[in-house]
Length: 94
Image (cartoon, rainbow, N blue to C red; front, side, top):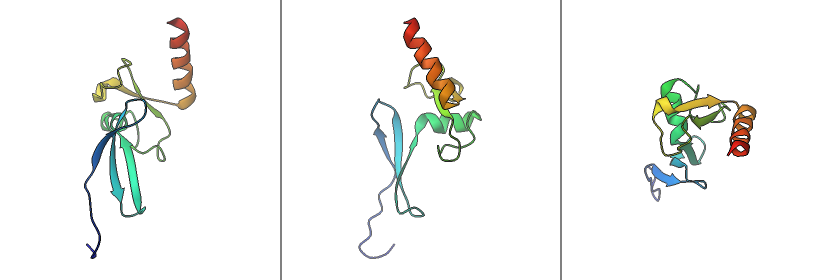
C-alpha cells in the first residue's frame, strides 16, 4: 500500500428500492463497484452466468416476489423484456 492510501473493505448497503448490494473498491477500475446480493445468489445457483450485469444482462428475479429472500433457489435469470412484461402483467392482475 502506498503512503497516504487508505483501503476500506467491502460494505453492505441498501440501494433505492430496498435491494441489498455489496460495495467494494476495484483497483483495476480505480473506483467502487457494486454487486447485488440477488445476482450473487443467481450466479451461485447457475441461473446467471456472472454476478456482473456487464457480463450477463439478464435480471435476477425473485421467484416469490420477496426481494429479501435471496436464497439461490428463489432467484431466476430473466431477460429484461420478459421480466418487465411479467411484472406489468402482475400489476394489472392485482
